Image (tube, rainbow, N blue to C red; front, side):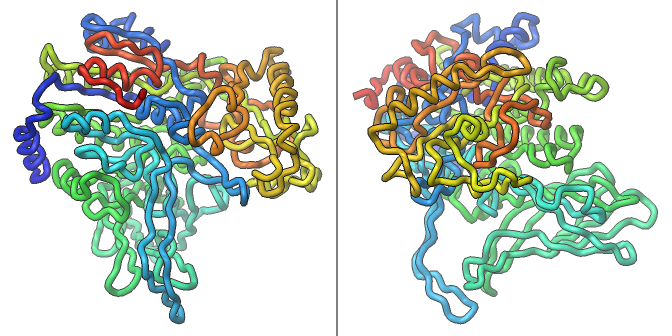
Length: 632
């Protein structure tokens, strides 16, 4: 409460921000224009309809490619990737051919080693890789207070808003986008190395077992040892329940029950600990004991990484409404995809995360007296990824027995957010502006396109061992001396350019002709299952993007046909046998396709001169009577 009282005092005293209406922008990630239109026509989104009646509703053109980090960066800066430097979830270091997450980078400080001890002598840092001037910086120049809450592509927080809470892109304590742990007495029921998680075997003795939560490397260890925290489990002799102990914390949970947030402390040296928080879920007690542990999140009461501006805001928020998921994408889609959580357990976990977001929005809105407030909601996006096929009987993975039960899950989330809009309208006056927007739409992901495999078959990519049964990924089976082009990320295609790539073989003079040849072939590629084009747009980056960061991105952005998306395998350099296959994963909906097929939404209580994400922040500034200095 102390922080909010302080902010209220500052807002009242700050004369430069006194003029003009309040502006609230609600970011509903992944809200689809077609589905929103359908639900509005049926009267299921009454508050959306109220906003439309006062102003406007229509499609909002998304980014190229339509991936969230790119799209939100377009909105933030009013510029495309050449200016802000974000082209995909995944970029690569051309000199080492190592993929990395695109929006932030951690660099270690210097240290000295004495025996097993590593002593830091200068601090490391976390760097935001999204460049360009954010729209809220223009507001700050006018003395207008800005609250930028959970904005994607803003970790670590820019430090240029009055107060910020980072969103998508914020890691767990491991530095990943989320790594779960499953403790189980039957580990062979799962992959030994599941994507996005770890399997820890439990051995029960007299109804008790112990294991460990594994953290990041100990920065004080010269041997790069992992930090760990002991976890103890005790099975109830009669009831289907288990007691879980972490440090001094104890929780008794029945089968199917979730814990609250539990402290995790990992000792680095006797005077230094790493703090995190975790939730547990009892999946099974008998005949097998299986307990899921969420990714270890940063503890907002004492975050190990910067997640707010000012630094103390995280603690104030947690004291106000309780601890919360600090991880940018908290819905554990990997646990569902790997069979660690079933659909019902996933929906319960997603609801826990979504309820936290709404609970934190309520006081933020209540105390919003003037200025600008942006607030982000991500549950529609991640739930749509996992449940879209439940509303698509034509999906190759559609289960006629299992899926109908979940056919309205996504629609119900839209209705929940409609209620959020209703509560927002109650708080705003006739002169205030409410904007509701999404970064992209959604559709069914039926077919997966293995772009690196296509490049192999077309003679542009060579493999070291064509007989390998399981490609190790990360380009380990690529023969770079005979490879002219490769794919990375969900939509990117790169030339193996001499002087740029570590083992480049294509001369600069041959680059243009090679890209034209590849582009023409991609546009002619037919999906043998449908007889239709698998790719409907191919964008040359040198024609599409301009600015200081054009060298960061791919040479071509591939716009897949609606219903087709680049495969997960190809995104990280794995080459498989076939080129186009059915998507049978739980992740059944997507948007990383031809951007024209997946528009987002724009609703506002007044008309805005915006048709795309690139226009929107500037149009909001104009509606506030502010010239967008970024366009100069």
